[in-house]
Image (cartoon, rainbow, N blue to C red; front, side):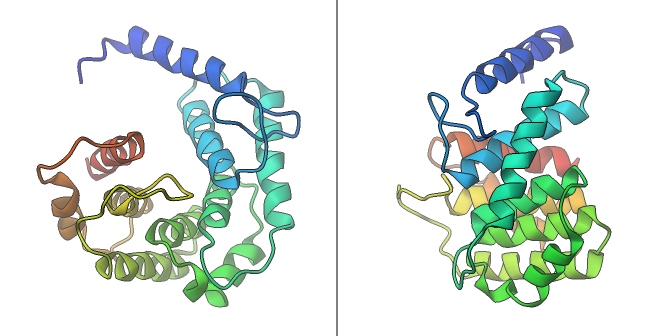
Length: 220
C-alpha cells in the first residue's frame, strides 16, 4: 500500500498506540479527542485495535490494556436489557471473547434469547465472532446468518447519515465479510458481500476504509 517497509509501519502503529493511550480515562474508557467516558462502542473499537496490535507483538502497557478490558467487562455486566440495537454490547463481547474474558453463558443467552433484538448487521456479526472465539460454531453461524439477512434488507446505497456506531451500509457489509472470514463461517455469501463493497463509488470514510481492508486481508 506504499506505507513503507515493516520498520516504518511498526513505527506508525507505535505512534498510534501512544496517541490513543493519551485519551484513556481513569476508568479505562476512551474519548475521541481527550480522556472521556460514556461511549461503549468507541471503547470497544479502541480496545479492539489495542487487542489486535498486542496479538501481533506490539507493546501495549499492561495496566492500560487491563483497564480497557475491565471497562468493557463492567459495562457488559451492567448493560440494561434491550429490544432493539445492541451493537455496542456485541462489539464489547467480541473483544472480551478474543481475550478469553467473556462469559460463555452471556454469549449463549444473547444468541439463544436475544438474537432478534440485535438490529444492526455489524452487531449480529460481532456476536457471531465472539461465539466463534469460544468454539461455538453453530451459534456463530446462526448470528452470521442473522447479520447477512439484516444486510440483505438494506439498500446498497445510503446517504450520509449520522450513526451512533460511526458506520454505514458499506462498512457493515465489509465488517460482516471480515469477521465471518476470520471465523471460518460459511453461513454468508462471501462473493455477494465482496461485490457489494468492491464497486467504484464515493470516497470512503475511515470506518469503511478500515473494514474493507480487513475484509480483503481476511479473505486472503
